[in-house]
Length: 252
Image (cartoon, rainbow, N blue to C red; front, side, top):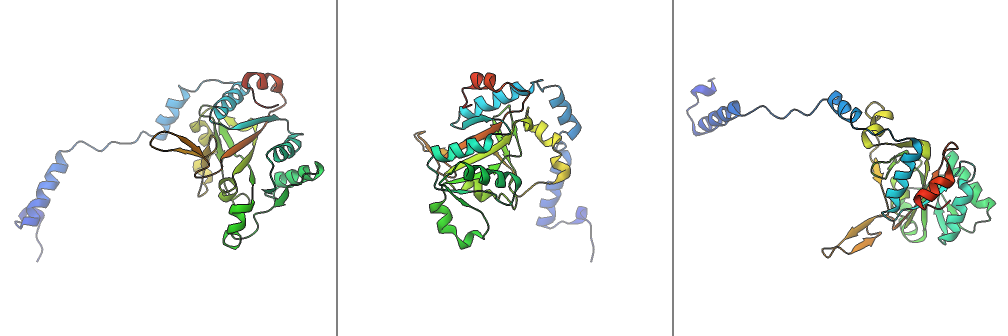
């Protein structure tokens, strides 16, 4: 037998009728602003920072949260990598040896006669978990881009540079092309076409080493990831590296 809700005199029917009546009188649900409205907001609220200004803001903000920044040129970042590895006493370092920058990094360490053992993430983690967590001192990755307004690196893990490389070793060494520093997050998303291009399982914003604090607000580094972050920032030729170093105090 069929019947309408209006004629349902059961307790269940009466409860549902009251709920439907309440919903009919409720105001319409909040509608999220359209993408065009969001874009319009940022178009009217985006400062016109030149590249040197974006780099300065990025470096200053990252250094304020314990990131060690080295200013380098395209032709000498491998030598600085070798210096950092020696300075930090790295004995074993994870490199993406199947990539162009990983190959350059390995060559740079060899040319500098580095004693650090080069390791590749070439096995399933289950096959060398104990070794990975106890013997690897540093992981080296590239950075997709960065955000000047918040001092954040955008990491985009993939099969060549899985998230484990920047998460497990106590030292993370990151390489960033200074031309890829955006003003803010919205600019990064739109300029790089995140919506159209798809995203990885993990897209990360990293500003400094991993840290946490207890109820007494005592900071502890390395609780959930690397306790140290070193950024090798490739400064484009049109930007005065010495002036940038003076403005930020970063290593040059």
